[in-house]
Amino acid sequence: MKAIVQDVYGSVEVLELRDVEVPVPGDDDVLIRVRAAGVDQGVWHLMTGLPYLTRVVGYGLRKPKTRIRGRAVAGLVEAAGRNVVGFRAGDEVYGTCEGSFAEYVCAKEDRLALKPKNLSFEQAAAVPISAVTALQALRDSGRVRAGQEVLVIGAAGGVGAYAVQLAKAFGAQVTGVCSTAKTDLVRSIGADHVIDYKHDDFADGARQFDLIVDTAGNRPLSVLRRALKPKGTLAIVGGEGGGRLAGGIGRSLGAAALSVGVGQRLLGVMSTERAEDLRFLTGLIEAGAVTPVIGKVYALADAPAAIRDLREGKVRGKAVVTV
Image (cartoon, rainbow, N blue to C red):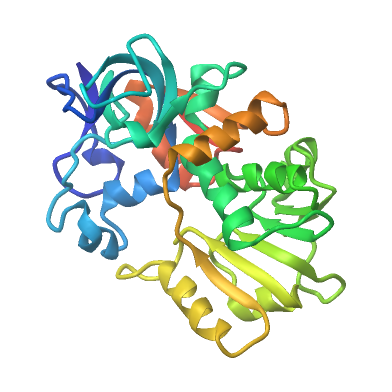
């Protein structure tokens, strides 16, 4: 089969389209014929091995443990291991795995769900990582409630676009922060108010919010706290920025430490990939409350370009690779 493979850590130049063996599913695995794969910031981190903490937590100290990149997947079940009870050959599924930039991939049953009936494979591949992260940031970490005022920073990005829609689905009043070129997009997905960060300061004291979901990863905690109500919650998503050792994760750790001595809840969001959250999202998607925002679709051979464009901020919403 064809796959995007890397043998060493580095920039997109280390990625190559190669012929490799089709994986053999174990007793607990589902073999998927990949139709599309989502691209997220995590793919860049696993490609570069940065921050170095990424390597320490199990992805390979000196070289990538998993050589094929890609984690979000949508496709058709080709075969299922003997312990798999929820899926059978021919099922249309979506979820997460290791190595989705390939024609076939194995995934665990507890990280998959049946694909929403009203989505294409490309749309479905844009959901698993970013939408689950946004859901857990709002519902689990942020404890969002109807009527609250929610600020989403990075509202036109992969996680941010889902956060806007999910916050609206939970009954919140939503303000999105984005660049000038993306204000129309953020309005179109349901934001009640949009702040263009190039011209306006959301932390000028004019408004304060019950919950801030920060997906941009580069503003000081002191700035974010000015925009937060005295008993509000800040949920920091992702680990962008920072140094090569811990990256932006250091800001999340600092937020947790500071939260002990103040009235505000300041925390980093560490998402967990779970089939039950995919099924929850499927219900919202099929009801029309959430729709994936896809900025650009790339061929498998162009997966390196997809990662580069996403990292450079050239993609509105999600980038997707078709297989």
